[in-house]
Length: 224
Ligand SMILES: N[C@@H](CCC(=O)N[C@@H](CS)C(=O)NCC(=O)O)C(=O)O
Figure 1 (cartoon, protein in one colour):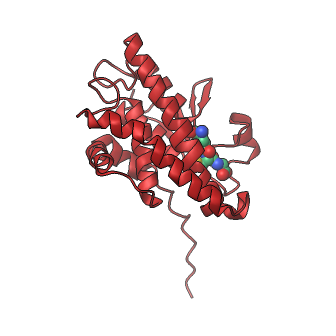
Figure 2 (cartoon, protein in one colour; figure 1 turned 60 degrees about the vertical axis):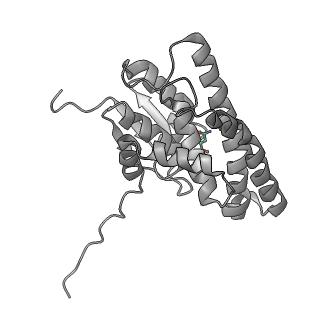
C-alpha cells in the first residue's frame, strides 16, 4: 500500500550468505527494509542486534514479530509465506521436496560450512581464527570431491538441481560455486556453464547490487 513501510526487514550485506536472502527477496518481488550492517565491524555485536540474533551473525530476517536466521531457512520461509505458483523457490511435491532438502543440506554442510568457510576462516580470516594452510588445502580438495554429486546431477543434462524448475537449492549452489571460483578452487566447465546460466537471472543481478556495502557517510566539507 502506498506510503506504508514494508514489514520485512533484512539485516546484513556483502557476504555470500546475505546475498542468498537478498536474492530471494528479489526473486519473490518483495519489498523490504534493508539494514546494511557488515560482518566484523562490530555491527553484529551491538546490543540491538544481539537481541535480534544472539548468534551475532548475518543475514537475519524479521517479519513482524517473527525472526529467522540461517540463509537457507530465510529463503524457505520467504517462499513458503509469500511465494506464488509462478515464483516459489521450494517444491510442493513430497519427493521433490525431500530431494530439495537433501541438496540444501549437502550444499550448506559439505560445500559451504565444511569446505569454503574453513578456507575463509583459516586463510582470509587467519588473524581471527588462526593460520592453517593444511586445513585450507584439505578443505579445497574436499570441496572438489563433494562437488562430484553436483557434476553427476548436472551431467544428466538438467537445467536445475531439483525437478524442472529453479529452487533455492540452485541459489545455494550458485553462491558456493561463485565463492569457490573466486577462491581458485578448480571447478569443472559444466559448473561454470551452470553458474553463467543462473547468474543471468535478473533477480540475481539486482541482488548483487542490493548486497553491496553502503557508501561511507559523506564527510562534511568546510570552506577554507
Ligand atoms: N550458516 C549461516 C552463516 C552466517 C555467517 O556465518 N555469517 C557471517 C558472515 S558470512 C557473520 O555474520 N559473521 C559475523 C561477524 O563476523 O561479525 C548462514 O548461512 O546464514
